[in-house]
Image 1 (cartoon, rainbow, N blue to C red):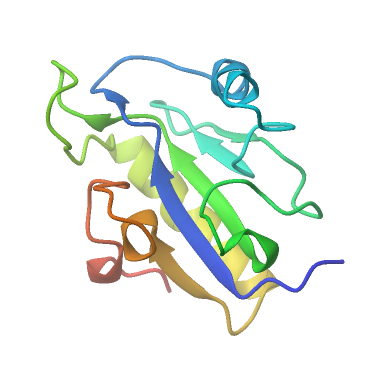
Image 2 (image 1 turned 45 degrees about the vertical axis):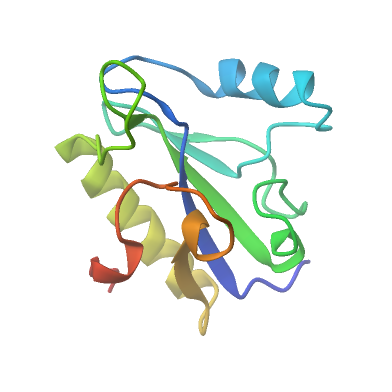
Length: 135
């Protein structure tokens, strides 16, 4: 079993309101040379939480942070024109994300929660993770 000490949140960097699923994101990642989808969980617009890469395997979502982290991606993160980063989380996504993070914090006590942008010069996940209440 891997030691988990970080939960890292991402967005799919796709236009607001546009549906994408775990299989489509996996195809994007395979085209980029990944062995599998990079994220462990993907949260759809309706709040459904889909499993991606198995949690017992290191993800491929943040350079230098994958060995001991879990990657969660919500679908969206860009405006409708796909030009400007935007917090596009639906209320369903916000609730599912909060519940998933709470569960993971209980399962992996002492873990910290971060946005991708804390480790890379990116807007992802298009909201300030540190301003959210995860408990």
